[in-house]
Amino acid sequence: MRNLIYICTIILLGGLLVWGNGLLKYKFEMSSATGDVLDAIYGKSVLLERISVLERENAELRTDKLFADISPPGTFKVYSSYPENNLKELIIAAGKNKNIKVGEAVTYGKTIFVGEVINVADTWSVAKTIFDQNENVIVRIGDKEVDGLLKGGNTPTVTLINKKAEITVGDIILSADKKFHYGLEIGQIKEIIENPAEQFKSAIIEPIIQFSDIKNVSIQP
Image 1 (spheres, helix red, strand yellow):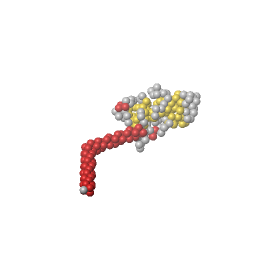
Image 2 (spheres, rainbow, N blue to C red; image 1 turned 90 degrees about the horizontal axis):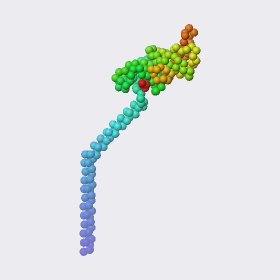
Image 3 (cartoon, rainbow, N blue to C red; image 1 turned 120 degrees about the vertical axis):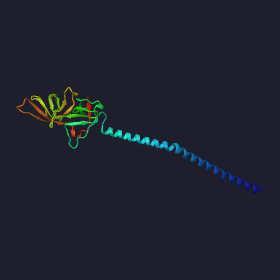
């Protein structure tokens, strides 16, 4: 009798284990299926949408950073004149849309004089440089602030310098014309020219920067 009870108990326990395993497997399968359904309806679509948003934001950030790197804040790009490399004028990628006006000074950075705006369209403008023969700017030279007149051209020159004025090669030339901000750097004296027959002496200018390398400029209203 005792053996019979023992055998029945084992059979009952085995049945419970089998039934329990089946129930657990059923619950697991149902949970997995439900998860797949919810994933299919919400999870994956939301995830893919979020990934797409992040990719767009990342692309925009890369573009903004690239633009900031190549065009510092407060500056405007200059169109290329390659292969002609026309130094007499710059075409700037900004115009009325950026409130640029004729007569404003064009600078490299904030202090180096490049030229002045002579024409403004909706989205671009033109500036003549110190290499334009029509560019004339009143200047001062060196520590003694000797007056002179910048005459633009293929070889920019400061003219009308008093013969008695003390100037030397290397003296810095600054703008002193009321139409621009005072003290914009134009260049330095490369060579002094004195002619006994002339009433004044002159000086050839060596620009501070290579104009052919200018890719960004600022506008000084």
